[in-house]
Image 1 (tube, rainbow, N blue to C red):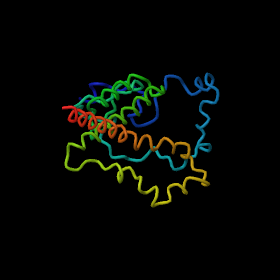
Image 2 (cartoon, one colour; image 1 turned 135 degrees about the horizontal axis):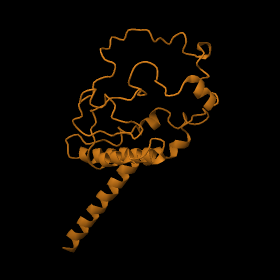
Image 3 (cartoon, rainbow, N blue to C red; image 1 turned 60 degrees about the vertical axis):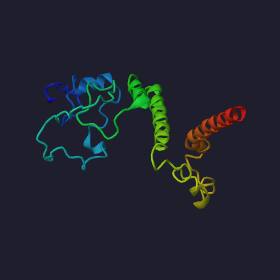
Image 4 (cartoon, rainbow, N blue to C red; image 1 turned 180 degrees about the vertical axis):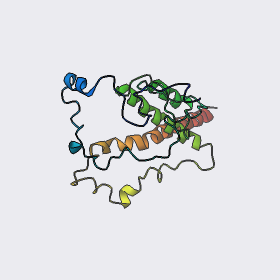
Length: 201
């Protein structure tokens, strides 16, 4: 897709230079209390480091659109897909469908982020299951870091140090060991049923 195929609006953040405002600075200041408080260079922490006169070497005003070989997530806060985007982790399966659904919500909504978090958990669980079909299945003991809890002073490092993540520690085992516990339970139940059938048969 060429840059002219979806021309950016003057206010797009992908075009170099200052924003093209529809209202003047005086009109905005009169309408919005405190607007333009950082217009004075003396009040801006980035001055004098901020430079707008440097030659970037770019040969374009608006970058050419990267070819979209697979549909990507599109934020409703943006008019179009960003010119450049990642392709290393394409959407797939149930987690991909969940991620697409999450982008129906604004990034200001909790539903957007909660669905994305849930999709990550689904993707991780699917990866664990697929690993058992390979010659190198996941190792829940070493790969979750549970051994370092005993070898690297895991418990003593959490208390008396004002750690911000202390409240989250109770949930960490649930997220780390939960999928494995569910998998072990399902496997154990299946084995129990198989043995019971063999005994009755």
